[in-house]
Figure 1 (cartoon, helix red, strand yellow):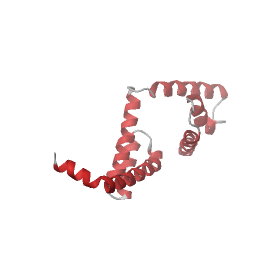
Figure 2: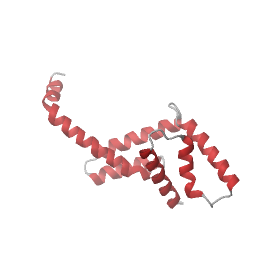
Figure 3: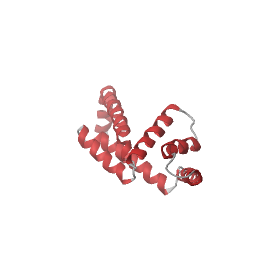
Figure 4: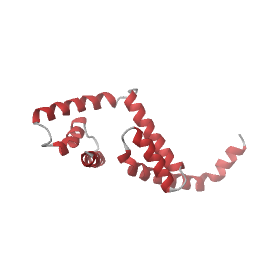
Length: 138
Protein backbone atom coordinates (compact mmCIF):
# COMPACT_ATOMS: atom_id res chain seq x y z
CA UNK A 1 0.00 0.00 0.00
CA UNK A 2 2.84 2.38 0.84
CA UNK A 3 4.35 1.71 -2.60
CA UNK A 4 1.05 2.61 -4.29
CA UNK A 5 0.59 5.79 -2.24
CA UNK A 6 4.18 6.98 -2.71
CA UNK A 7 4.22 6.36 -6.44
CA UNK A 8 0.77 7.88 -6.88
CA UNK A 9 1.82 11.05 -5.09
CA UNK A 10 5.01 11.27 -7.17
CA UNK A 11 3.06 10.79 -10.40
CA UNK A 12 0.44 13.38 -9.47
CA UNK A 13 3.13 15.84 -8.39
CA UNK A 14 4.91 15.38 -11.72
CA UNK A 15 1.61 15.88 -13.54
CA UNK A 16 0.84 19.07 -11.60
CA UNK A 17 4.36 20.39 -12.27
CA UNK A 18 4.24 19.67 -16.00
CA UNK A 19 0.66 20.55 -16.95
CA UNK A 20 -0.43 24.08 -16.14
CA UNK A 21 -4.21 23.58 -16.37
CA UNK A 22 -4.72 20.00 -15.20
CA UNK A 23 -8.24 18.91 -14.30
CA UNK A 24 -9.69 16.78 -11.53
CA UNK A 25 -10.30 13.87 -13.89
CA UNK A 26 -6.64 13.77 -14.96
CA UNK A 27 -5.52 13.86 -11.32
CA UNK A 28 -7.85 11.00 -10.36
CA UNK A 29 -6.74 8.94 -13.38
CA UNK A 30 -3.11 9.44 -12.37
CA UNK A 31 -3.83 8.29 -8.82
CA UNK A 32 -5.52 5.15 -10.09
CA UNK A 33 -2.85 4.17 -12.63
CA UNK A 34 -1.18 2.15 -9.90
CA UNK A 35 -4.43 0.43 -8.93
CA UNK A 36 -5.08 -1.16 -12.33
CA UNK A 37 -5.56 -4.89 -11.86
CA UNK A 38 -6.13 -4.62 -8.10
CA UNK A 39 -9.92 -4.46 -8.35
CA UNK A 40 -12.50 -5.25 -10.98
CA UNK A 41 -13.18 -2.54 -13.56
CA UNK A 42 -16.65 -1.68 -12.26
CA UNK A 43 -15.47 -1.12 -8.66
CA UNK A 44 -12.47 0.83 -9.91
CA UNK A 45 -14.67 3.16 -11.97
CA UNK A 46 -17.05 3.73 -9.05
CA UNK A 47 -14.09 4.47 -6.81
CA UNK A 48 -12.73 6.98 -9.34
CA UNK A 49 -16.08 8.77 -9.44
CA UNK A 50 -16.25 8.96 -5.64
CA UNK A 51 -12.71 10.36 -5.48
CA UNK A 52 -13.42 12.93 -8.21
CA UNK A 53 -16.55 14.13 -6.38
CA UNK A 54 -14.67 14.26 -3.07
CA UNK A 55 -11.83 16.29 -4.63
CA UNK A 56 -14.25 18.71 -6.26
CA UNK A 57 -15.99 19.28 -2.95
CA UNK A 58 -12.91 19.46 -0.76
CA UNK A 59 -10.88 21.85 -2.93
CA UNK A 60 -13.30 24.69 -2.31
CA UNK A 61 -12.32 27.48 0.03
CA UNK A 62 -14.19 27.14 3.29
CA UNK A 63 -14.27 23.34 3.21
CA UNK A 64 -12.99 21.93 6.53
CA UNK A 65 -10.68 19.45 4.77
CA UNK A 66 -9.25 22.17 2.53
CA UNK A 67 -8.76 24.47 5.52
CA UNK A 68 -7.01 21.81 7.59
CA UNK A 69 -4.68 20.68 4.81
CA UNK A 70 -3.78 24.20 3.70
CA UNK A 71 -3.11 25.19 7.32
CA UNK A 72 -0.91 22.11 7.79
CA UNK A 73 1.12 22.97 4.69
CA UNK A 74 1.49 26.57 5.91
CA UNK A 75 2.67 25.42 9.35
CA UNK A 76 5.01 22.84 7.79
CA UNK A 77 6.69 25.46 5.58
CA UNK A 78 6.95 27.83 8.51
CA UNK A 79 8.42 25.06 10.67
CA UNK A 80 10.98 24.22 8.00
CA UNK A 81 12.02 27.87 7.63
CA UNK A 82 12.18 28.66 11.33
CA UNK A 83 13.23 25.22 12.56
CA UNK A 84 16.87 26.08 13.04
CA UNK A 85 18.96 23.48 11.28
CA UNK A 86 17.82 21.46 8.30
CA UNK A 87 17.24 18.20 10.20
CA UNK A 88 15.18 19.84 12.95
CA UNK A 89 13.11 21.86 10.46
CA UNK A 90 12.52 18.73 8.38
CA UNK A 91 11.36 16.77 11.43
CA UNK A 92 8.96 19.55 12.45
CA UNK A 93 7.54 19.82 8.93
CA UNK A 94 7.15 16.06 8.61
CA UNK A 95 5.34 15.87 11.94
CA UNK A 96 2.84 18.52 10.87
CA UNK A 97 2.28 16.96 7.44
CA UNK A 98 1.85 13.48 8.91
CA UNK A 99 -1.24 14.71 10.82
CA UNK A 100 -3.06 15.24 7.52
CA UNK A 101 -1.55 12.23 5.75
CA UNK A 102 0.81 14.29 3.60
CA UNK A 103 4.22 13.29 4.97
CA UNK A 104 5.30 12.26 1.47
CA UNK A 105 5.35 15.95 0.57
CA UNK A 106 8.05 16.86 3.08
CA UNK A 107 10.76 17.05 0.38
CA UNK A 108 8.75 19.61 -1.56
CA UNK A 109 8.14 21.63 1.60
CA UNK A 110 11.87 21.62 2.37
CA UNK A 111 12.64 22.79 -1.18
CA UNK A 112 10.13 25.61 -0.78
CA UNK A 113 11.57 26.54 2.60
CA UNK A 114 15.10 26.68 1.15
CA UNK A 115 13.92 29.17 -1.47
CA UNK A 116 12.14 31.27 1.17
CA UNK A 117 15.28 31.34 3.33
CA UNK A 118 17.34 32.61 0.39
CA UNK A 119 14.73 35.27 -0.40
CA UNK A 120 14.70 36.36 3.25
CA UNK A 121 18.50 36.61 3.35
CA UNK A 122 18.64 38.67 0.16
CA UNK A 123 15.79 40.88 1.35
CA UNK A 124 17.52 41.38 4.70
CA UNK A 125 20.77 42.31 2.94
CA UNK A 126 19.07 44.75 0.58
CA UNK A 127 16.52 46.26 2.95
CA UNK A 128 18.14 45.55 6.33
CA UNK A 129 18.83 49.19 7.21
CA UNK A 130 15.32 50.20 6.27
CA UNK A 131 13.86 47.37 8.41
CA UNK A 132 16.00 48.54 11.32
CA UNK A 133 14.71 52.10 10.96
CA UNK A 134 11.11 50.93 10.82
CA UNK A 135 11.53 48.80 13.94
CA UNK A 136 13.29 51.58 15.83
CA UNK A 137 10.54 54.08 14.96
CA UNK A 138 7.70 51.88 16.17
